Figure 1 (spheres, one colour):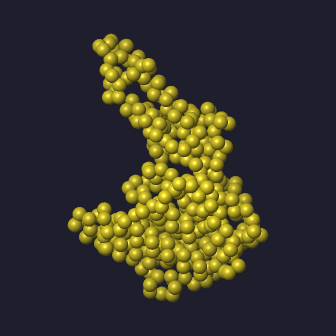
Figure 2 (figure 1 turned 90 degrees about the vertical axis):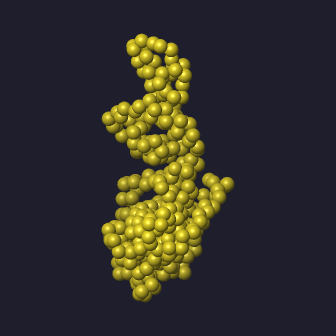
Figure 3 (figure 1 turned 135 degrees about the vertical axis):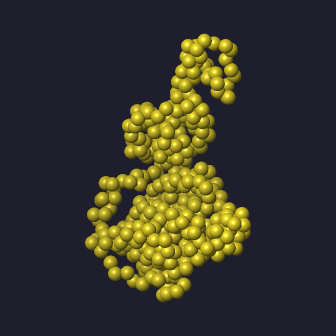
Length: 363
């Protein structure tokens, strides 16, 4: 077995000529590349998709993923195999240093199975989305477009009150749209699909807490699969799309208001930024969850409640089956100012008007 003479992980070679040293280096590089190839195949067999691997290893491995694509065969789980076919593209080769190759080998060896892989769908499934969209009534299509417009506008504003009012209206309208779309499927199949969401450091657990709360209100279930921020959301395809869209919008707003709220600069001056932000995020998630629940209840009719409950129960049952040993996430809050600002960021506008600023929305 050849090794690289300058690698800190391997013994040094005795004095050799330049050509011999170069050959040793080349052999060692080829050996590392082969280990990475085998590691990527092993990861695919465990349910890892190219997007998952990019999240852990970075886009530097894009060319390696494409090279491995031709080796992905029927031994790989079907849903994972389809994800590889969708998520790999021909790219120019990126030179990786020996240290980077060694790091990839080490990280690949640590990957654990992702047990949601049998349920993976295509989050960007254009054909499926188009088919679902064509089944909607003209009123439902208007609601769909308005929901997206409300979330986009909520992200663009710098005012907490306006952002929160827009999100609450989107949730209220979404619940109307969700109930109406049940139609003939109200007694149908609620078999959940899985969609993975990628959370970026810092504050991964706190971001996941927000994702889980949004999912819970909207009939989905979640699990944080890895410590470096790969989460899965289980639910019907339509619910998954809405939950992930709403999470992206609220998470961006959370980041903005966490840095610009009144107590942020004061906490920084006192060296309390970390404690402030932890408390802010806990409060923000808690209050956002309450507001979304109220917005949802205002749109629900008695006849729809059993159907919506069945969708949520199906997602939770599937989660328990896939992850029978899961544990609850526990987060602590110790900064009063951060907690106060988090609550204000989530609900300030809704304290000054009618209930949450929500009225029946004309479609």
